[in-house]
Length: 106
Image (cartoon, rainbow, N blue to C red):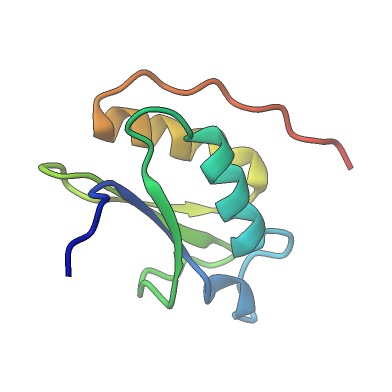
């Protein structure tokens, strides 16, 4: 099987279901926001996965991977930390950091 993408951001889909998982952070919402924040040339594929085995208390695990680079894992506790993932990806992929999209206030 041949894949047309090499850069990927993995979002754990099991973290939110844990009893000690994040309270207000959901994998589908995070995936949608990451796709929007990381769009453009060289953008990674953003995928929801099963458990990544890096469970952090009150956190949702996100892993950024690119060819020739060491994968980087982050445990997000709030959607405000989305900018950290964008910066990690920019550093990992060797490209300029995307400008953060404004988040709607609730």
